[in-house]
Image (cartoon, rainbow, N blue to C red):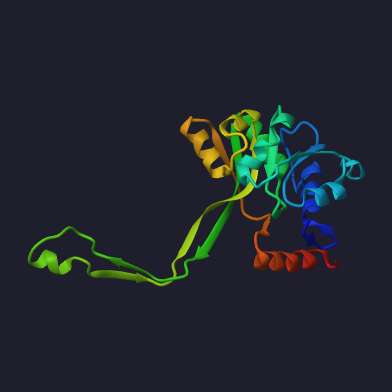
Length: 232
């Protein structure tokens, strides 16, 4: 229920999911907009339920999957299993998303994937400089002198890659990989799918994700969001 502008963050996420557009120029394979949301709740569940109720005032249906303790990402999703009998979207509740969800759903369905993961192109500079050395095996004479010789110094090098942003399109059979009533991470569940040679696809984006995972990132996101809206 963290506020972002004049609404809770969760309300922004729900509006984005149910808009049926999601910033798209779209030729998607989506059959109608999303009109049923399941909120997996634990801590502060009464506050969330009192605010969103059955979803009627937002023009959607909302159900709640409750747990009496944190179960990590996949474990928490497992509590919603009884509601999920077709392709579904899974989102973490600590971010703002602003990319083409319709296109992601369409690509998932057309490729017949088991799981699709939204992946953000990301780059960062490491905090420390990296030193490369000659790490050859033990030797005698000249070889011994060369061992552990410094070859190069890379000061705070840039690292690039794709990061998971907590948005998935999944088939309901995915939940069979998750143990019931146990803390189980999404990374563990996806690894199990890969071990079973299931088709896991990536949906790459360059922007459209604001992380709100800690106080610093929340304050930065709040400033960006207010600037974007022009007002609170």
